Length: 172
Length: 102
Image 1: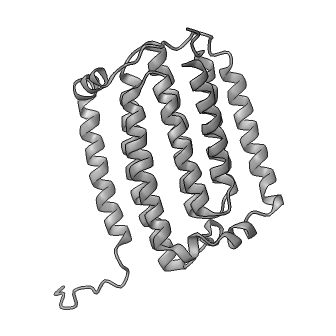
Image 2: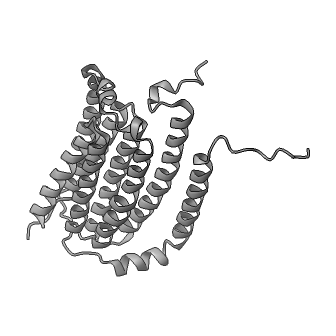
Image 3: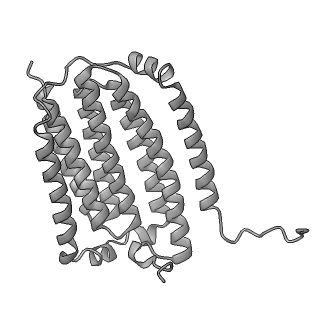
């Protein structure tokens, strides 16, 4: 599985870089999907088949599709490739490149001494993950469900129309 | 079978985090900033999976499940804000949203 990990990692990093630099929003989202799929292969190679499936179903299947929906809703504005090019003049690249490259180099140097201890090849399957999720981390699951409910209510409230007529016959 | 060293997994995670940072700094379109944050979260998830595989424990995978729940809630609220900003200011430019400037 070693070669699989390195190839999938290279694909994930390159497509992620393409996703953040493309001017066309649709191309960027499709590169992001490719990056997520490559990362799912990474997870599989690292012995996490359950998370690999979740990565495809939840991330590529649900989250990215919601982003695509919103992009279609504001299609005229969001997919304007020309304006996006105008927002990315060559001088706009300099400082972000330097800062991000500095951060990445420092982290990579720091982490390269993290130990050559090999990650184990044996998979930790869905059974163990489910058992840990619903015993040790049960309170976390409950909190995550509350967070998702709050996200739902917040998104509904924020996206509701501004022109909603207020009840006019309020007595106060 | 030769296995992957832990440091290599962490280096790939760091590269994804750096690319996400780069995107957040580079782009002016709010939608691309959201995409970049997703890439950063995926870097964090990869670090957790690497640690889970290193110690052969399910805990790291459990935390990735939590990261995904958090990312779903974050994308829902973020996209609602995005729609709201688009409707009210009719721009997607993060630099143009400076009406709080004194």
